Structures are given as C-alpha cells and as structure tokens.
Length: 456
Image (cartoon, rainbow, N blue to C red; front, side, top):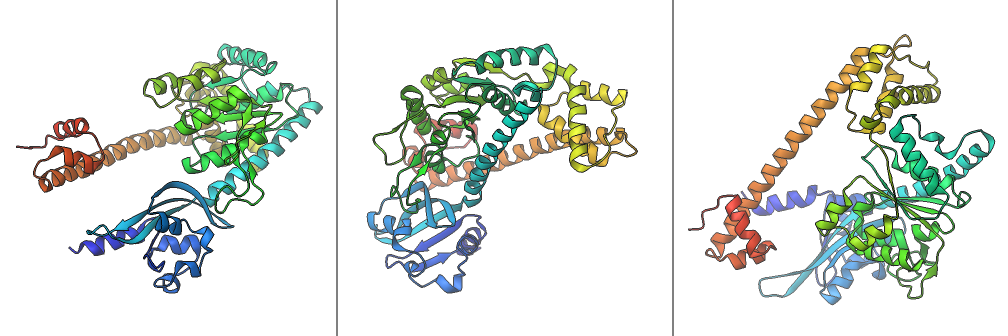
C-alpha cells in the first residue's frame, strides 16, 4: 500500500486546517478543513504565494519561516472574523535544509463568540434577577430549592459568606448547582449591583486562556483588537468573578491568578504596570484539588488562597427528600415554557425517583423532567417512559465503558508497535528509542514490561 496515499487521505480528512508552504511562500498543501476555515479553494491557492491571500503581518507561517522557530498553541487572528489556535513548525530534509513550513490551525471562532455571548447574557440575566428580587418576596437563595438538612446547612454557610468579601471555594459533584450557589452569594452581597462574571475554566482552549482571563494591550500580537481588550478578571471589577472548574486551570495561568489574588492587580498581556482591582473571587470544582496538588497538577499556594471559605454542595443522593419538590418545580417550569399542562407525579413514580442514584445530580433530574413534560400523556407521567430513561442511561454508561476500553486497547497496540519498530530500527538501543518517543528510559523500560516486548 502506498504510504503517500494514506498520508494524503489522513491530512485531507483532518478537522483542523493544515497548510504547507515552500521557502518562497508558495502553498504546497491546503486541506479541506483549510477550505472550510478560510473559504479559499485548493484550485485558487495551491502553487501561489500565500501572501496573495493574507496580509504579511497576519501570517504566523512567515514568522516561522524567518526565525525557523516552531510555534505551539498560539492564539491568532489571521482575519477579523477568524480566531484560531496554531501549531506551526519548519520542515527540513535529510540534509537539514529548510524545505518549507507546516501550520495546523484549529478554528475556535465559535468558542470565542460563545464566550462573549455568555458574558453578555450573564450580565443581562444578573441585572434582571436583581430587579426581580427587589419586586418579590424572594431572596437570592430561593433558587436553591429544597428543605433537606444537607442543603439548608450549605445555604446557612453561603449566607454568612455573602456578607463578606472572603474568597470562596465551592465543592461538589457535577450538576449539583455550584454556579447557582455562586450567583446567590453574589446577589446577596454588597456587590449585587456589580457584575457577576462566570468563567468555565474547562471550556476555554489553553492557548486562549491568558487573553480571555487577563486581556491584552493594544498592538500586543498580530490580529489583536487595535484598542486592546479587557479580560474577564478586569470585567468583574466592582463585582464577582466566578471561576468554575478551577481544577482545569492550566499551570501557567495558576501562577498569574495567584499574583492577582495576592496583589489585587491584573496585568494584561503586554502591560508591565497593571491595573488595581476590586474583585471578589469565587471558585468551584468537582475535582479533588488535594489529589491534584499531590500529582503536581495544581499549585498548593493557589489552593490555600482560594480555600479561605469552603462551601460544599450536596449531591442529590445526600438530599433525596428534596427530589419531589425539585421534580415538581422543574415540571412547572417546563410546562410554562412549552405551554403544556403540568404532569402529575404518581406515588410510584416518586418512589422510583427517590430510589434512583442520580449520577448527573440536579442537572439530570431537570433534563428528565423536561423530557417527561414534552412526552407526558393525559396529564400523567408515563411510567414506561421513566423506566426507559433509566434503562437507556445504564446502556449509555456501559457502552461508554466498552468504547473507552476499546480505544485504550487500540492506543496501547499502536504504542507497542511503535516501540517495537524503533527498537528494531536502532538495534535495540533503548536510549535512542526513548528519545525518539519523547519519554525517559525508565518510562520506556516500564512500557516494555507492560507490553511484554521481547528485547533479546
């Protein structure tokens, strides 16, 4: 089988835009994803200088071509409407002569726009909620539905926290309502008239994180907005910054965030002076941060800065007495949204709901109530539909487990084959093989034992 055909097919079907240029800047390769990303067809661009289609200052390829230095996970805006994360490197032949540059561009425009829309929507929602609270006999914590001792203990602590500016860490499984708790703390605080800025640390690509969180000065990098841009921390000035999934924060950003917490000053990219801030920080995670610290994935100094006050959101398994109230609340909510009758919960249905383990917590219960509202017949919840949901969920969990195992086995087979190939190529020299694999000799020895590779 011709390896060139295989390689060309792989490159053509890759979701990221792949571009290769020669030393004279002429385009040698332009895959289908590049066509989709930049709306330029192969027939138009291949064989022509890439500078005919982009401004010189908007091309990181030219920087790599000139400096011969690779670029890794760089945020870039080659066009006003395009946000990409780029990995680019020079290409050399066997004689160590530069023969071109390759660039792999991941289009993150939709993610950037989504973050901007979420910020705008969150600000508007915060203002609307504030007005609602002023006109109704509700408190900010009314959204946290339930009378269970576990939830009421959480609310009591959160109320005390709201009366201070103390940095707060909210712990709890996914789907327990950590953001709702953070929003309630903000709305009940003296900062209620200020912005509430949520940031999902697990949803932002690492290359975009610094500019999204800290902002940048004008002219800092190619494709940046000419007037510069405030980051999420700066936007929260006078209010609250909510850092959800803080365990996903990259190590480099952990250092910068720690500096903000220590100095109450934010430094945009390209700014050496910084700006004074008045921001209250609330972080949340469903991970074990102490375990991450032991694994050197989360800084201990940042952890102790964030963990001034700890609030724990109980799982739905710890507050099963709240399930009927929550279920009825969601049913009424979706019935009003879809203009349908509110389905009635029979006793046998409530029993089943309370007995279920709810791995997805409140989020899963809410999604189920939405589904039931739409599919209910004659004003009652269909028992078979409810049972079908639980059975379907179990099948999905089992299927995911099987798929994960299959992918792991496939990965290990490919890794084993690669190790065998390199050991054969370099006559059993483990130091060279480890270097080519990008791992230490110790790790290579462990993998040889794991895969039972015969090195005799």
